[in-house]
Image 1 (tube, rainbow, N blue to C red):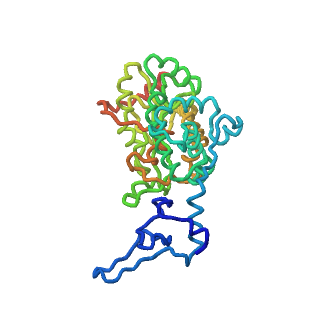
Image 2: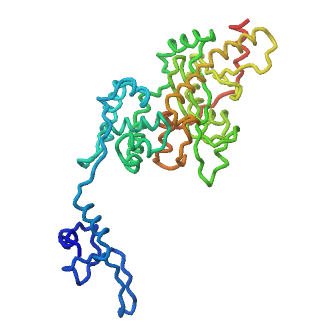
Image 3: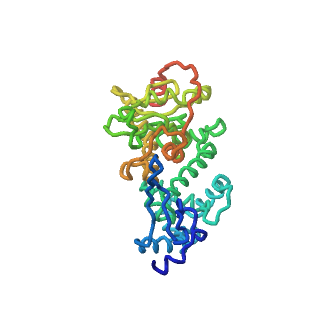
Length: 374
């Protein structure tokens, strides 16, 4: 037996290396956990780690004696401003404010010397959302393992969802005057408080309902409805429906009809494309304009509603995980409390549908054209 093996004793070995020990413990024979015993009890077969394999014994000894080596974690304070913007899409002050807000939800109740600090958790998730890469790549860049980053991703996204109502807010009554003025400066259409449209976020669909997620462009996605203001501030998001669902159906099953019904006494409208129905609070373009006033209305409508397209482009350029060029979301879209639901929801928060208010399909578009575009 090699000298390196003779110093091993049963009491000195960690419990995870020990299996059933035979009668020759003093001879340093170590048995693995697996053991096959015949039912008759006459013959037993034991596979021992004997001196016939000194190389393996020496490897186990070194693994036990050498302490684990941890990768260095990323440090927010030592990064350059340009690197922060390129890698994480935010400056240092914004990231620190986000870390402070999410810190109570990210601190582990069990103090451990190898725990991941909250700021490292936040910036690693921002790296994943900004690049749309695989978890393994982001984990290596952040100084953690892939299983650890998977847990961090779920934890950070869940923390973000708790604060979305503080940022995604539909215009209140006291803000309507300012919002209408901003939209009027874009295209000279009065009383507009939002532009609405849908965008597709590509993903890998579940096997059982693959056809439900296939959209009209023949790839699988979630159809995300969004409302934005004139300054590209997102005021409402509904990320609950698969790619095959039409925009009009998503609209009627969201909270928008209820909210706009409450604001109808203020005579305000949303702008939508031709894929949406023409409602009492939603203005859509004229399909076949016949008069100069209708053409003028379509031009101003197109110029004003363009802000929602720019918002989609800016959002997907900043968070490549939402764009097809950044790859597909490799998560089941209906998995409860999983990172799949949180990715779309944290970047584009989920809007729970409320009871729809009763409304009449009144065509206000003609009255708007006659009043403001003649």
